[in-house]
Image 1 (cartoon, helix red, strand yellow):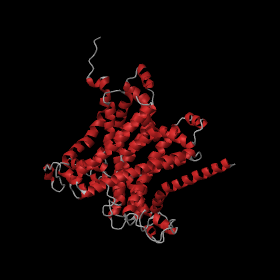
Image 2 (cartoon, one colour):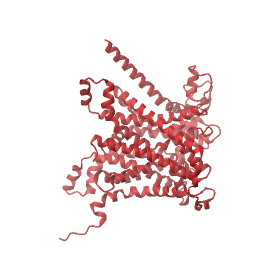
Image 3 (cartoon, chains in turn cyan, purple):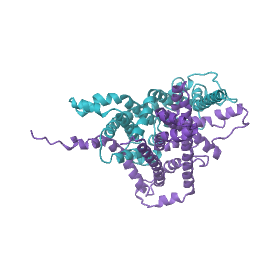
Image 4 (cartoon, helix red, strand yellow):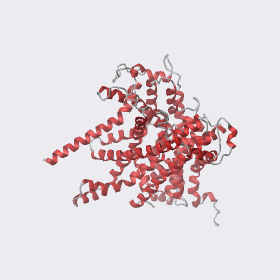
Length: 285
Length: 305
């Protein structure tokens, strides 16, 4: 009897803790989303308006420049820049990462552990610390305020982690499969594309999504290497709002929603592979 | 048939190096060369507004100056404190959350997906979100406290020295705890059942089982999470830059915001690069420490080659 009461108390406590946890995780984001759909006057109202009284898409129309009153921040240009920069750097990082990941997964060679550690350490350099010399060099070779300048930086930022993930995915594929294909007359190159690549495809895709998100979300370097609508990305553009004397909370929230929605959709797509990749790559090494 | 001489790039021995070549070329160009350049710059009195000062060799003056600067040391100390509190909290909360979700059978997948949300937020968004939450005038936190009758006036979360630091740590922990939770949960899923049951049969209580079986098994996962986290501890720069910009009056200044201010706002590149090197060594030390721990834990698991 006592045992079952203790069990029930335990179950209630578990649910209560989970509930509080979910509130802490979800409420700040939900509040931003709610704000994105309400007029700025309602945000500033005292006493606060909890549930939007006249929700609408006004803020989105404004930041994208539809309708009469366009605000001074060119969000559509930032959006296009972000998309181009993130997609291009992801594709390049994946190609380089597949090549490197395959090398680590399938070959034994001198300095293997040292090279791997070197790769990882190159990723640890804080973005803001790296931005100083990159800024000085890029401004000499004309890569400041150019999409290409950011793309190159993001490829380098993503390569180490992509190699780590893809290495893990290739390791999960038994070596014997591609060896059998080679016995049957395939070259190693053919065996890779016919056997290993299809099997690791979903893993590689999730590495790609991770790289995309890193580029999509990056701020420390982008804020110093970009100047204008030629190359400014969404996270840098978000700061445009705070530069003004009064913060346009509603417009800023609408822009925040635009940044987060692609990221959340991608999260749903990869979650399973990403966890598997991180843990297997790391533990089984 | 005479054996054809294979050109060296087709020899098996060189293949892995060739496959790794693109990765190392790009890292050389974007990371290694700039870092060498910035090492050189840290020994000059380079200021952005005077380009010729790039050749103005000043030896160790920049380093002497920052190491005798009280503001630098307080930013350095604050950074260490910030990292220590944040990483430990993230680990403990992540472990707690993983154990909690592991217990729940109904709706576990949904909970796990929601857990991953903060991981995908751009740090700049996390900063903005909490700047909004902690705003003294219109923030949801003050509004809620007021509505519940818990406070009678506006609490200046981002202005008070301690509260501002608390708000920043809160944002950082909110963003990064899920890395630990997700990886530790994966570890719990991968855990074999037999030792647990054997221990229960032998009369261990649940604390002993946790301490001597579950926790040692989870350690490699803890170190993976720590390694992944230490790879980009400097992400906190984005959060601080949005939320307080290092203010009020430098009270939330971390090493990284100080580098940005010295380098870009004050245009003292030489000195900023000297600080940047301190921050790089700090990050490398963190990562190296956890990476060696991870390698040791892997050996213990018997998985390493």
